[in-house]
Length: 328
Image 1 (cartoon, rainbow, N blue to C red):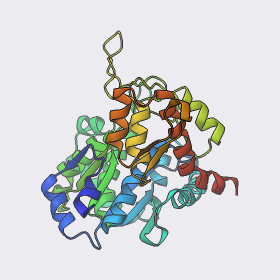
Image 2 (cartoon, helix red, strand yellow):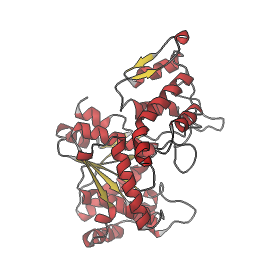
Image 3 (cartoon, rainbow, N blue to C red):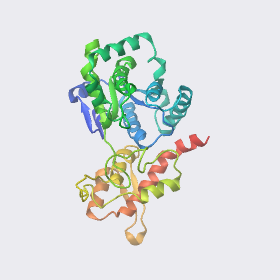
Image 4 (cartoon, one colour):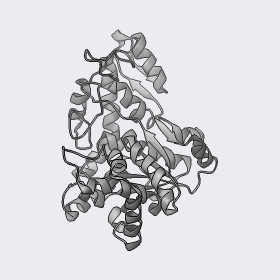
């Protein structure tokens, strides 16, 4: 793949395409970042954006991972001491998962977000932003019926992090889109460049195919899971024999999360995928691209149960190094 293909592979959206094309023409030395609240153990959501960071490293980018301890504190995730301990654990998990340690800079938010210049720029953004605009951007991180002041400041800090980290591309899931659009709106008011952004898809709930797979509700997969845990969760997953399931009876859209995990997690990390089957059922199937596996599921050549067995195997290979790191 060329640089543009690596940068945009499995991206749900890039903002803007012309900016991405310019970066792809000369990616060496360019820098991309993702920010994560230190929240314990890497789960499949962290791994999706980490896969994109690995793509960007292969394309020639340098990578910054912001371990956002101040953001976590504002989101009531514990004391600074607890959050920083968690951040160290997450750093090691990202390296175990596959980020190139020599080409990845890990930064704590508190390393720069408590400095005078940052604080004054943050206040300048507060002067330029209405509460309604901040509330729209913070919708994905707020919880409960009452909105706290800290949750209004949170997205403005995310916007300001981008110029302070000196990055060329801000990466995040589609739930980060509103924050990145806020950054494009408000950063020019303090003479900062609006960010180029790249958004990864959201994977549906593993059990139902609806909504978003979440570590806080429903079923998810994390580095704490044993091989047996992974097999159990994948075997119970919603997997109709199609990539385009019918909506629910009440009209809710559905996805096939098993196929999504193959597309966004497995095929970006493995050159080929083998689905093992007994000879009496046709023997093993080999795939070097996701589209072929999807087509076989649609045609009936690949049974959902066999697809699940292969998915559990390859997910376990991806997670095993991080699980070992946690054990140590």
